Length: 253
Image (cartoon, rainbow, N blue to C red; front, side):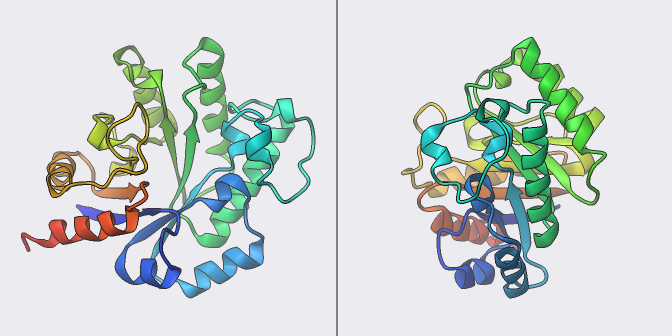
């Protein structure tokens, strides 16, 4: 079992992240994908063995939000209402192409799609998610897709749907393992967790994980039927907690 520990975003300097951790999930690609030359520099500066994953552009997953869109520094084609919720539109496909370019430059191993809790498991949304992953699997090679569904998708009645996406389209279902959101199927023996802090309904970014939390996390992943496991901390103390977790992983060696 190979375990890769890192952070969602550069919570410390790149030099420090590259030195002490195994992986970073790039967050700029969610809000405002950097230009190719910035991504090329990032990949060039990182050690060859360092892993990048990429968070897909919010224009694919989230509906129009004026506050979020203010962070975008480029002209967005088409109509705002045609973006988000994995819609089968030219606009969403354009946003996917931009995400794909970033992933290819960084040689990312996984592209992460994080849908908001407002993207509920309606019949329409279920069909959208199936159609979207069916289409993009034919559009890029040598990369895995991860989907972090928030909200009701984790209710028992949707287990079969999450398993279908894993088995049919190879989608890695991403959950917060310390909140009990652990999928049952791991495509290509790959698991991926994003840890948002405990307490609160979905996230608590101010939470600092205790040693007991991290020991519990180790116990959880040791039971998984996976050969590669990506552990991404997404709290304010992400760097410190990731470093401590690496020490806990190595404590029995």
